[in-house]
Length: 286
Length: 283
Image (cartoon, rainbow over all chains, first blue to last red; front, side):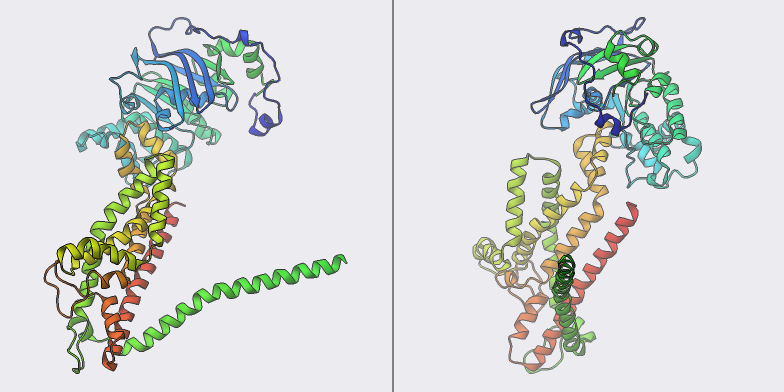
């Protein structure tokens, strides 16, 4: 059950009172059957100034699967996502504690620059943001070009590849040099996905990628995500619980900066082990 | 009673409207008067010779301001070499880097500099460049105009860069593009029209500066052949001719004023056209 923003504001933030001790402070084990995790998060806390937004989160994200992150507004979903590709480095007041490993490598390690992490962990934002000064083709290849790839034949090949994967090729192949902003909203978002795919990341982070789109465009993005998980590890933040149920293999429920529950999507939605999760997925709050 | 209040409120509102309207008209009326007067007095002396010939000695009629027109463009070119890169890079720093306190200080400094009377700039460059070199020069004139341009361009660049939505910066950085490349090739490129606008307006502003040139470029009745020699400039020539006792020079001064005014007007109009285009593109 999805609540609108207004309903969330009207309701008190914590209708269900849960003793603190119930909150998992230690490791939450990954879903059964998972092999090496793509991303392993240990004791992750994120502060903005004095405000602690994420509280000791432990989570193993399985590779080549879709992991959904759900929770009410302000619970730290986006903050968690942005910690994975070190976007918080841009915010002077942000402070990060804990460890995040990307296929076994510490992303805060000495040998890894934020730029290198971001090349391996792509991101798609809530609001589609193709570069307005560039054509459709240039938007897709910009990540490659500005990272030093110059060869036109390679660029053209990777562009087509990315656009095909993003299910946009057939719609734009005859107008590659038109401005990117001439596309429709849904197409723009798929263009942004193609742009992220063109640099061939290992992980794709998606921050409510379909929340600004109509149902038809949303369905296309969802199909696309299901296609992409064959090659990519995808973490998607969503407000839409049906969407999480439709496309994800595993789901993590965040509440007030804490990871409340993490498990296979079917289990989390049908028989959650925590009362808070059950209340949220059944629409009793949030 | 209630009705009375209502009437009073309407009256005050009407009065307010009239006063503010009159005040805003006071901006436009002098502009029209200036334009009309300069046009009327200057148009008669504008001819081919004015643009192609050097000034004639006192007593001889005819001649033109070719050296001053070329000199003004030379000075603007020199000023741009200094003012444009430093101004734009400084604006980039203010918008994209730095800390809140440091940037507050720099911004405050730039705003103060923007308010410094231009004659003071002239005296500073006189002391820093002219005195050590023992000569007035085109170089000193270019430096002083460039220094006036720096804070102007810096602030406008900062303002337009801050208008670029953060989503574009994040999108570029999330692709693993280095920050300096993101700034130069995404952020600056997105705001390019605004930056060009700022540069053009700064050029239009310094094109008419006279006082600082009195201390630096000095003026020249002949062609300038070297940057270390004094150079003619339209505002200087207008000034020298206007304070002279000769009727013929007065007419030439009017013509020079008209040319300068037209140049500034053309720059301003092209800026309007540029910005209109920009709004059309961003929907």
